[in-house]
Length: 429
Image 1 (tube, one colour):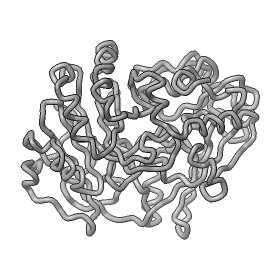
Image 2 (image 1 turned 45 degrees about the horizontal axis):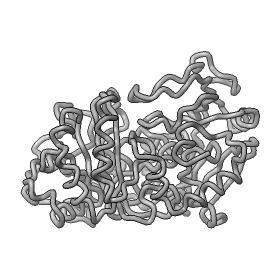
Image 3 (image 1 turned 30 degrees about the horizontal axis):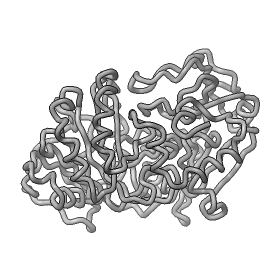
Image 4 (image 1 turned 90 degrees about the vertical axis):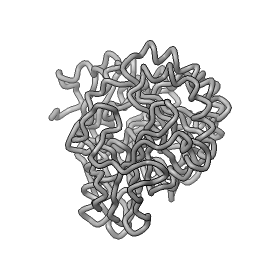
């Protein structure tokens, strides 16, 4: 472990993303071992961007200057059972945090499909799980500590800074380097997960699709743009949600574990037997102790109003024959509305139309504008950490608090220490 913020020789070039499709830039990549070292580093930097676990598929974290990882900072994982909160270093992975909370009889309000992502990176980019009543991961943050452009340490909280806090949590790394976050926790409750297969084509329409998505606390629907749902992953709170029958809405219960991508072994997936277990072993699709895949993929995702989910899918369906050769699988999830200024679920209960593409960047980039054109009537908001081609003015139009956010950015980073080409193109200089 480095003892200063001088770049470790092994980190001189930051390399590429988990998927291998994003080059973060020439570096150097710094790995401070303390907040004090981080403050000194930021204070003398002309430009700098922070990296998380490198699971983003966009260039949101790339830089033409210095980069910094918080992976070497102490985890500082402090659970307050009485307050039902946890203070944690930004580089800690959700899976590790969830285990610590569970040991104290508590749980995270929600988790993403991967427990391997960091708390800071996921919050900054709007990462989410699924559930009609479950908000994005950033919505559970109640306080953040960040190093500002001058090297000062600033704490902002939901209680003490209500006028700006919703703009500071999900900030795309534009306000400073977040070192710690305090999150709300909930009482631990056992969950079960089951998978149903091969739903009839008519279940992708209106009320039936809504019924599928309401089948549990968290539901993910996998399909291949051939007109029917191939898999429904349903995660239920024991005692709150009614256990599903073997035959449900025309789909049959899977008799053995499955992987969401065809042909992949299910060893890395979370338990699908219906047996109760801790929420952190059911809410994610994949187990923390395994790497779920080699990362050879590209991802795109668009948030639309939840009540328009079936119409949005129907609008894209005519492109199915062109989508399928490029696709591993597609997923539909839901996210409850929140108040975060740059959240794709800002003040809108949302359905997320997700694509996991084969690693064919040229072909995917050619097809995305046509998909986005068909989604245009539904005011799509792209996931900040995934690949899209929407014009900046289309993206900006979806965020009514954008000007408030830019004012906050001007206040905290007037010299644009934390900018990069990605945020400048989408949100302006």
